[in-house]
Amino acid sequence: MDQLTEQSFAILRHDGRTSFSDIARQLDTNRASIAKRINPLLQSGDIRIIAAVHPRLLGLHVLAHLSIQTEGDAGQLAERICQLNSPVFVSERTGKYQLISELHTTTMAELHDEIRAIRACEGVVDVQVLVYERTLKSFFLGEEPALADLPIDSTDLKLMELLQQDGRMGYAELAEAVDLSISGCRTRINRLTETGAMRIGLMRQRTDMTSHLTFGFGFITQGDLEPLVRLIDEQAGVEFMARTIGRFDFVSTISFPTLGEFNDFVAALRGLAGVTSLETWLHARIHKERYQHSLHRIREGAAVLADRAAVAAP
Image (cartoon, rainbow, N blue to C red; front, side, top):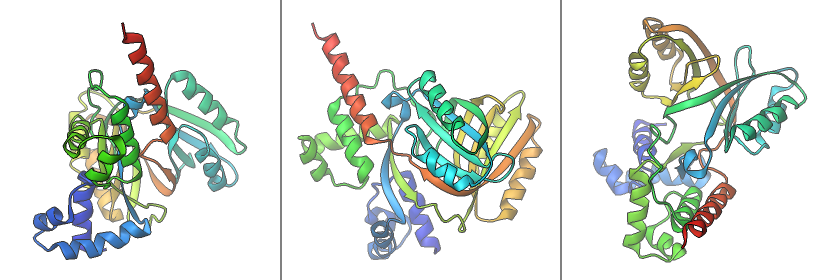
């Protein structure tokens, strides 16, 4: 993939609704050069532009990371785990634990039930659980926004649902679907993205992991976390950072174009005084990566909002 395509990807990852003309201006080229690179990839499904709604906005208050030790065919077991309700990420990995899964649930009780279901799967030997205390960065979303006072109504939820299917849907089409003016529709979408409740960006098809190496990092730390956070945040391929409760204090996911760059980064990490232990693993095959949430979660959110409105009514 040429440099112009990769640079276009970087812009669309930050804002998936950036026009081809704006991308061309930023990269000092013409619109046709951008369109001929991006349109075929959108049409083939190699890339998608989708909205990611912050999980806590949908009532998903418990986020967890599972390391799963298996026996037998790890790939078949991964596919079974993908069928459960709460996993948003499932991958085969290197090391003692053969699978990684990230779960988003409404309550600790729901998380408990999902873990029990995974433990009951044939081939599961052990499950180690980390609960995310605070997400600092994810593939689409930045640090967790303050959502408590953000007014969300059924129209906002409908816009989220539509943009999860096609993040580049035009304002006129969106406005017609939700019975708003174009300017009203644009205002609502800008409010959702500017507050961090929703992000619209590019997602690559990652079933083929030959073009880059995606590594997970688990840290046990002491003292100030700021130097570690700053070092990770400076990496071009950082996808995820979170403070956790469990066998690690902090986890991160970072992609590297070469093994040499990974080795250099690990050496820098080991030089930090606050890192007392570091474990790394390679995501060898990603089975599921869903940054947009199932549509039923949004519909449930709409029902919750309607119930709240009914209770609040005099």
